[in-house]
Length: 321
Image 1: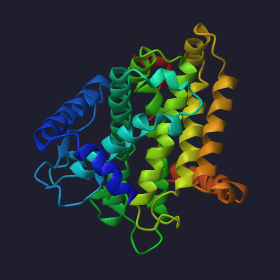
Image 2: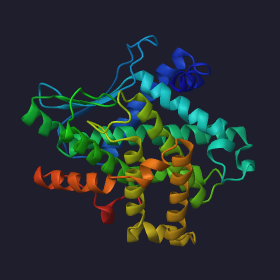
Image 3: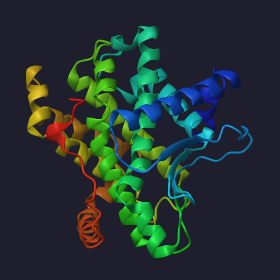
């Protein structure tokens, strides 16, 4: 029911023509990300299957290697419509989702609509980054060479425990989390210009991303079993960990210090959002009995043994900062 409600948030206010134009804009946006990042890699194409009708409820994204050796990153329109609906939900029910921020900040409808569009763009960029790093980190080639698979399809578990796939998902999540900060400074700045300070901007991002992971959790066939994909708890903890780890880099800390924002204050805010989220979705027991440190150690061993370090971010030379 949650999924249907979020879908309807978008469907009831946007005609088919408007959504089609939006999908075309998203394709253009994602192609520009590849250009902006100056990614020197074999041909990567963007594909949104706009031929799917609203009655075909496929909520998925994929990274794929094609027969000619090029790569494709694809989205089902329903997934994009769903996360649009989530961004609408977050900004129309701001008192529930962004309770720490003075509600007066949201009274301007024009600003609220802009915030919704920025959160939506942030969501798209994160999911796209996850799929992109499946390619850049060698995941597709690894699966193709070792298991004769040509695609990584999100939100779908197989019937067998596939630890390789689990570690590849954790790896893609890690680099997408890093890129959520480094690749989206322009979006963070747009949110700040709506009148929010840096702490409020990051709070909005933390809360919004936690809710996105909850939607990913609902789309999974076996959401409480860690098989081919991380659990909801894993994704929330690791996103926030890698985001804060990136935020702690000297170059970024200098940006915060210019606005008299301390890293420790943001770290406390980050912890607060996770505590609120764990309580909301009754994840406290998972937190108390978490084996995520053990899982990340096994992931580190897998990453080293399969030599997945062929691509990484050089924060010091990132031109977006």
